[in-house]
Length: 246
Image (cartoon, rainbow, N blue to C red; front, side):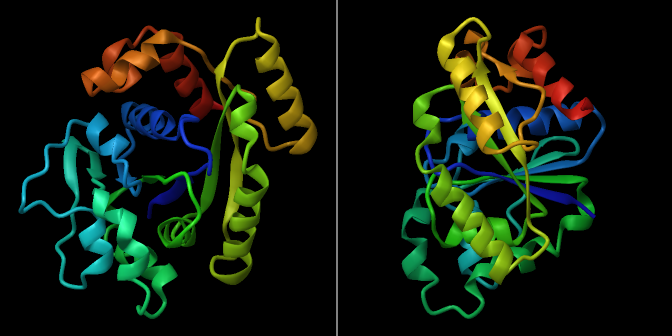
């Protein structure tokens, strides 16, 4: 049965999607069966894998809101699949307002397919809400990507409060897997200060492996590729593999 991990940070642009696609690809390279789920109405992960949706294609939106929706799992590579997002997720709070147990819909849906994968990685939207509650309710743990920038610290306490709320009221097994520091450059003051802050504020929860800053990451969205497909020799690819080996 799959281990389910939500990549979550209420601050946008801090590397959630980058972490999802590259961590998933690294797991797949290591022989694991992997499913990625895009729950962000910005659809960054969906676009990154090059998914070109037609009118008949189902997404995570239909799967959550419709009881009779077919399972929208699409194959990226053999043993490496994804569920795409849709911009209609912006209005899902209204659509689910009257649903019973609405925070557990995704948990129920994933129970149908968890045996088909070793890992399920959920790319979450940068905000609080019913979709993220569903993601955390269905997850074993939360991974928090944090960019080496003062902006990445904004909203952190709100995020931790939200995780704790789900843990206390819906999913008691939910845990914080750790904070993953990305865009790290040991030669810059902001990287050192960010790392010092996290080590002081959340001792024991910071991954020793840090994802180093690399311009190759910025090139991957235009090519609809992970760092491994775009430049496997880049230090970013090396770092994600090292993270898993730790």
